[in-house]
Length: 429
Ligand code: SDX
Image (cartoon, rainbow, N blue to C red; front, side, top):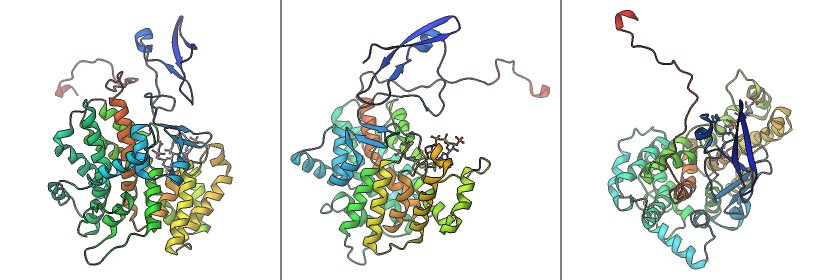
């Protein structure tokens, strides 16, 4: 807390507001009393200058390219830890000790199966449905199955709902993949770790034994860690807003999945790979860079730019390293798409248009190449993002529900429509 005050002058009136300090990052001006004092709203579509909440989970320094989860740098978590350990950290605020980690892993492992009735939901979709459409529908349907964990005011029910979501997302995601490729569902296996189990459910077939490659499983687990949480991004804000009304937690996560799907957000990994494929060869990069700068051309460099990072996305660096590891393990280091990506990144980083706007590669720039190499079709990329981000959505939802000052989110507006006018009978229009 600071004793600093912010003064706002509107006409002859002057209003004073408290300035609050976080543990790190920009101070905030608490304007919650602005409307009561001045009969005015603030106006900030896109929330470029607005803090929607107080949180202790994740911090991003966009200028320095820093990402902390409960104070731990993302590169240290990704290099030294694993995804379930990061899940525990996001949910509980501290890294687990040996016993806590073993208990957490055991609980997640024993919640990976779906109610058998849920498998029937998939047959309602066309086989060519986008897997994200399946995810929105099936995850939302979880709210129809678990009536023992709907009292969100009960801490134990909040935790069981959280564990179920973390545990079941890989099973649902793998089933969405199997359904669209026309192969039978593969059940989870309790003898496999989280990432290996997911790869097994996605790529095993009944006709033969499937051995998970440990190097690829480690890469998959690290990719989950990189996508776990990211402050108040669009999908997390969606989950918080949905949860602020007291809605069912599974339905709130389904709302987050819907928001993540957009190409400006989590859909950018699929869009980035499609863009690299469309560019095709290094000699066509200048043509696409010019299009990206042309205001009359809707084309954007997918996987570039970020609302917060005006420096390199720290996740992109680790993602790039993982890409090289996976391609080396699979022996296809001569993937032409990788050549296009690396040359495009090099040219863009030297180009004034991108440098002057702080446009750097974000996590989505390299993730598509890696996920394609792991065997996933592009339409599954955002599904994997939603699988990993589920723990971040849940941790933020839980923090919001447990905030004693929590109230329903209800933004106001600047109204520019018609003022009151009398009804016009049909024969007068
Ligand atoms: C994610 O918020 C999060 O944390 C999200 C995320 C997470 O983990 O949750 O990090 C995940 O969503 C990463 C971002 C993935 N999206 C993409 O890669 C899509 C391509 N990027 C752009 O659509 C854009 O950069 C955004 C949406 C990511 C950010 O847009 P902003 O902050 O609203 O910025 P802007 O659109 O106002 O752009 C500022 C300027 C504009 O030019 P000027 O008007 O100043 O001349 O930069 C230009 C834009 O035209 N610009 C781009 C560009 N991104 C911004 N120009 C070309 N290519 C781009 N990619």
